[in-house]
Image (cartoon, rainbow, N blue to C red; front, side, top):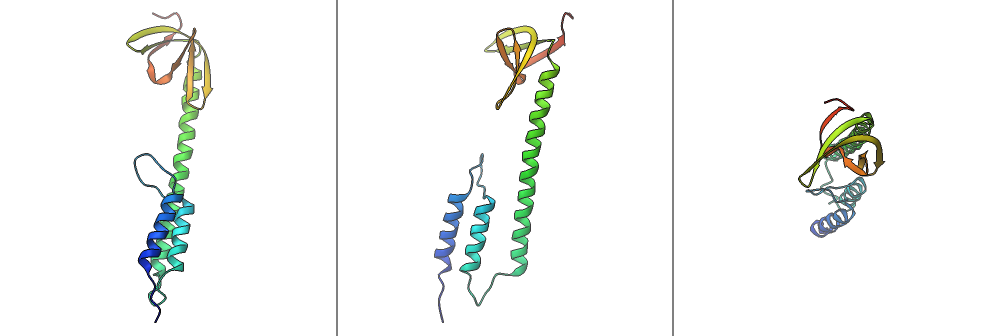
Length: 143
């Protein structure tokens, strides 16, 4: 009878998946490619006398599909939030804003908006102001 060392192959598969997994903030994550490589390694090196349970296989596949769906939702939500922030910034053109940076409070009229990968920034005179530091918005000329 042939002996299969599943410990070594599982460790090799885990190492391969760890190397292929994308890094995320604060936790371990496994990408789709790494998951599929790990699953193929499990199937390839499984003990023929004790094959993988088909219910467990289907559960793992369903879980991966669920994770992919959640990842797509997160990406879509991030895009929606970015668009919403841009629209919020654009709606402030012509308005007076107050903001504080390094303990100094400034007020001015928004004359434009700069959009880039970091998010929208209000153009107030020579300053570029992030939406996150704006503490007050009022109509131009209002007290």
